[in-house]
Length: 238
Image 1 (cartoon, rainbow, N blue to C red):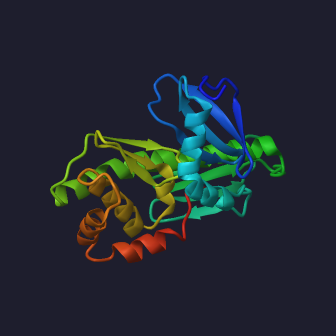
Image 2: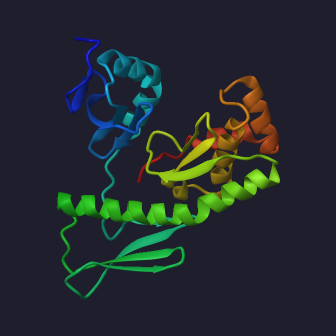
């Protein structure tokens, strides 16, 4: 029945396909994430089909855009990340095991000779390795930068957490807890600052009203519309 809690581990949507469901006793709201194998949703215990369907309809435009952009990145010796915050590349080594060498912002993944990059399990492992590199850099960079921007603008927040969200760059709760995606490390510095200022603005104005955009425009020196448009050229994914 529609009012009974969901018990199935998947939800079939005619447009978005199979959505994998994860129930969490600590979850207070529904959170959707796009991963290599499709969409995932974290749900509070006891979520009903009606509640899930309502959330899907409210977020459908954003989820549709995210899902349409989703692509599986193939990682091999030609793959690299070269941004303001991270320089990562793969190299062929001499040994029969993978090695990781890190020096500040420079990370090298040393691969055994004749590595079979077509192996799906290896691709999954490499994506996780790259994701952990992004997470590590994000934890080193983002909390300090957020603190500095808050200080410069006379603003405050409660906590900051780094996550792997692929549906949004950041979010701010009504309790002024700020969540930031580690995919921010794929952006140039000025767009990272724009996202951080966006979330800091939400500590004052929780909606996207005209007042919100006016405040964000002041904080970005009148460049919020330009920066927002530029951000659309990037995506929260590898």
